[in-house]
Image (tube, rainbow, N blue to C red):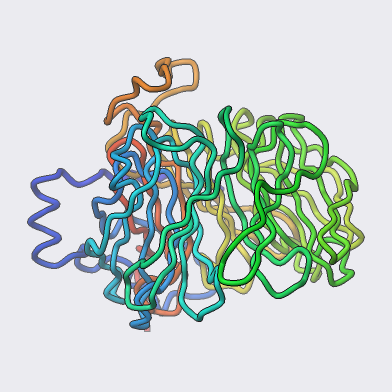
Length: 423
C-alpha cells in the first residue's frame, strides 16, 4: 500500500514569525500512544535555515547539554566561510543558529565522530572540488569540538593534488589500533581510500588506496563476515556494491561485487529480515528507489529486491519509524521533492510506504532537470531534498527525520502525525 501526503513548505516571512513565536507547529507529531503497526503518518513539523544549498546533515550533541544539535554542509555554490552551519537543539525539536564554520566549495558529506578521543564530538566534512581559487580541492576538513559547542581547531587534510570527486567519509577503526580511521570514496583514481588515524586526531597522509578502479560513490563499515574485524562495502559505477573484507590489521581485500539497482549511491547497513546478519540498503538513482541485499554472514550477499520511491533518490537512512521493532527505511527523492518512509516487516519486505512532499523546490522528472555547468550554479536551482538524518530530536523516545534541501538551504523536521489511539 502506498499513501501520499502533501505537505507544503512554509513561506519565509511567515516562517520567521512562526519560529520566533513557537518554533514548531502546534499539535504536530502527537502520536506517542499510537497502536503498534500503525503507519508513521509523517508531516513537516518545523523548518530552519541552515547552510545555503544544504546537502547533508548529521545530528549530535556538540555542546553536551543533553540535546541533539545539527551540523549541515553546503554544496554548490556556498559561501566557503559559512559552508558548515551548526544548529543548536532545544530538546523539543526546535533549532537555533549556533555557529558558522569555513569549508571549501562543492562540499558533499558531514559526519560527527570523536576524532581525537577526548570525549567531545568533532565534525568531519568532505570537499570534492573548488570554484573559489582560495580553497583546496579534494580535502577533508576536521573541526575539533571543545564540548561546549565551539570548535577550537581546524585541520585540512589534503588527499590528492588535483582532480574532482571526493564524496564521502565514514569513520571506523580498520586496523584496530584504537584510533579513528576515515574511509573515503569518490577519490581519483576511483578507489576506496583510507586515512589511518594517529594520536591527537592526526592522520597519515596522503592515504592508502584499496580495491579496483571503479567510480566509487559512498561506503559503509561493518563486520560482514563476522570475524570481528571491520569490513567496507562501497557503491560504484558498476551498478554494484563492492565488498572489501578487513583483516583487522588495516588491509582490505576485495571479496566480490554484488549487483543492485541502477546508479547506486547512498548505502547503509541494516537487518531487514531480522536474522541477526548484516544486510545492506542502497539508493538507486537511475532506478528511482532503493535495493536491499541480504547478507549470508560470510561476506557475501544474495540477489537484490527493489522498492520504488521517487525521482532521483539520494540519501538513505534507517530507523524505527513506527511502533514495531523492525527497522524502516527513509529515502530523500531530490527531484520528486519527497521523503519516502518504507516500513519493514521483519521478513525483508517493506509492504507499506508513505511519501511526504517537503519544501518549495520544483518537482521535476530527470529529463526535465536543467543542465548546470559547475561554477555557475545559482541559489534556488538546487536539486531539492538531498540530505537526511534520523534521530530523536524532540526526546519522545521515537525516531524523527531531518531532511535538508539544496534548493533553499532549509532543514525540515518530520515527525509523526498519527492521531492518538482512542481510549
